[in-house]
Amino acid sequence: MKNIVNGIFNAMNLKDFSEMEPYMDQDIVFDFPGVEPAVGKKRVLLLLQVILRNYKEIQFDVQHIILEDNKAVAIWSNKGLTKDHTHYSNKGLTWVEFKNGKIVLLSDYFKDTSFTQKKSS
Image (cartoon, rainbow, N blue to C red; front, side, top):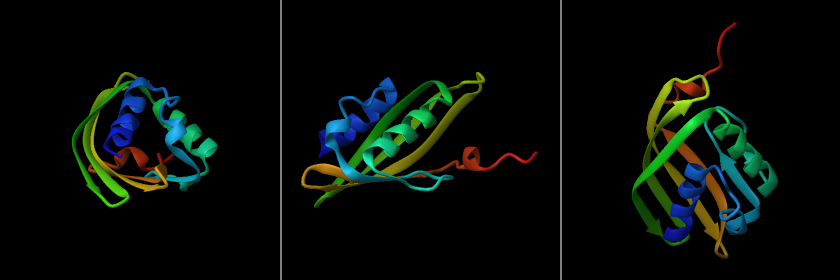
């Protein structure tokens, strides 16, 4: 499980989910702050790609992975550059649940959620 969790963040850093996709259950749920949960492998992969389009560069650094039964928590920090060339950084954790060796739930929690707020017009 630890290798799979590390692979999630490696995929984010590379902006390439081809190595992560085989570890995703067909009915995976991705709960990301500020949007409705994505359900199903295709929708989760699409949401991940949409999120990453907001960053010209992004790098995740996983400090700890805590494992228990079929669950894992990854504690991470990230930094990068948004597509409008603004420096970005955040800290958070990702909750991961597994069933039969496949990821069935990804749920993100951030220290700074200001980027999820809707802009007023």
